[in-house]
Amino acid sequence: MTKRGVLVLTLLLSISSTSLSADSDTGVLDDGNPYGLSESERTLIQNRKLSMANKRKIEQNAMKIDEMQEAIEGLRSVVDSLSQKLGQTGQKISELDANEDRVDKSELEALKRRVDELENRIDSNFKKLSASIKKLTKLISSSPSIDTTPKVSPKPKAKKEKKLSNSELLKKAISLYRKKRYDDAKEIFEKLAKKSYKPATANYYLGEIAYYQKRYEEAIVFYKKSVGFYDKASYMPTLLLHTALSFKHMDDIENSNLFFQTIIDSYPDSPQAKIAKRYLD
Picture 1: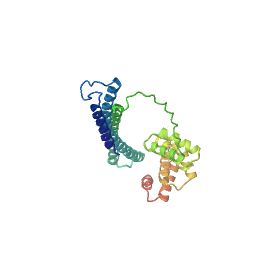
Picture 2 (picture 1 turned 180 degrees about the horizontal axis):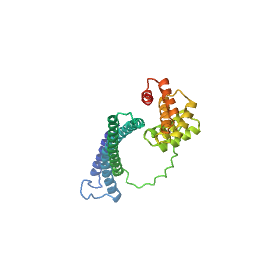
Picture 3 (picture 1 turned 90 degrees about the horizontal axis):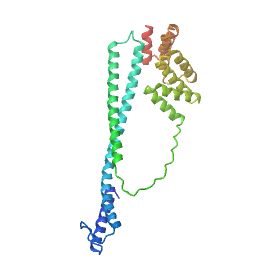
Picture 4 (picture 1 turned 30 degrees about the horizontal axis):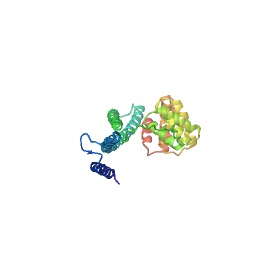
């Protein structure tokens, strides 16, 4: 039976009970001051009316809560999507900054304007999300309780925090990395590396974090470890490019050129090879 059906049935039972009482010797319930009723009977009638009003309000609030939750989920999806786009644009800017002598200035300025636009949109959606959550909290807290009799609720058992599997930890770390929460991501990648879980991937991302934090010598160490574990990963062109650029930042031109040439020879059709050619032209 639907909620509306239950509500109608309860209302009918309430009317039937009231009518029967009116025909009995206890008094007329529709009267402003019914005679022959005990205090508990009058309280019961008042509580029944209050219960019916509360049920109607709860049903209305439940619909509003569902709508608010859908809106919040939609806003969260928008924020996640914008954050991912911001991370990708930021990475491209870093690569262009590394090649500032040869980069198209107008392209760089356009990307920087894109970053500002994305940051403003993220900030705007965060404000909307925060406002929606406040409305939802207020709506839930204002929802009436059907049972007005005070009850002592049992003390809830403390929930144990779910222990994430290694694969779940890896996904979480990559997500934090893409959001540029480098220190938080680094902590998880280091744990995974110690456990020898996906060591090539863990060391690659540790290298990327060190690279974007301009710790170039440390980045090269992590890249070397990653290649030692697995040298056919999809991220290899980026790894080699960032190794070459790290050497360049360290003024080690010989090794820098060696890695630029390696990218061109091994991945000739990759975007990274195009960047490497600019340095060797």
